[in-house]
Length: 346
Image 1 (tube, rainbow, N blue to C red):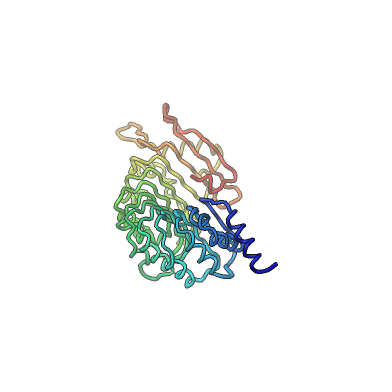
Image 2 (cartoon, one colour):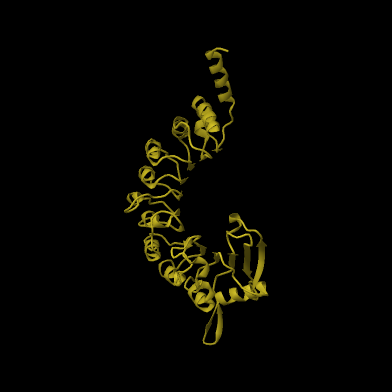
């Protein structure tokens, strides 16, 4: 078969390729094939609105990826995660990109490379940053104003860079990046120009005043998810006295979030020791959500859903979700998962 005939067949296949709004790739060969079709059929290229590239192995060549990213000009939602890609290789990828419609990005790119992309795309609404910062000083993303940003997932050490001066309403601060103290994080959360309503935080289980400090900076939360760090900074995770074990104090501090509707907690230790676990767990939750004022029991005004994942990261892990009855205000078990998955921890 001649080169001309081969090219003709490829062009025919390209024009038969259906236009899809959502495309995803985990292998380089599939990405390469799609890019070839998209380069020959403009409708295929411009029809893509949601692009998900999550490669399982290191790229052999950067060219197909660069070509794909530049062809799909109408992308609104971009997921880009590469394996074994050197930090220096990310910068040329991002410098060439201009998406006029993009609203969401999820990537494990180094923050220095990502900073330029953010400057060119100030209308982002949501982003998920999974890569490390690798910067000794201030995160490079601090120089990127994002006046439309409302939803952020980023390493704890870089939250300040993306929250300050932006209208962020939902934050997930996860482990990663440089060392960052809890007081620094709390200070950073208070710098959003909007009302912060949702917070997911990886925390050190030895932080005894976590709720009190958070309520001072984020009193309007409606959803709070606390996940114990798997490797606490003090290295004594299994022997620490958890703040939630002081049930009365924990309950009083939860009252500092009067709008809180949903609370989630993940811990590596048992929630309750000894027999009658279910009954005692229910009693513990009741203590968390009720305070005594002038000898009168006062329930939390809004809290109605609690999800607890204990003995996490062990074969005996258990996830249970509790719901408060609207009439008698008692807490009742809504469901149970053994073993749990992260998809159930919502």
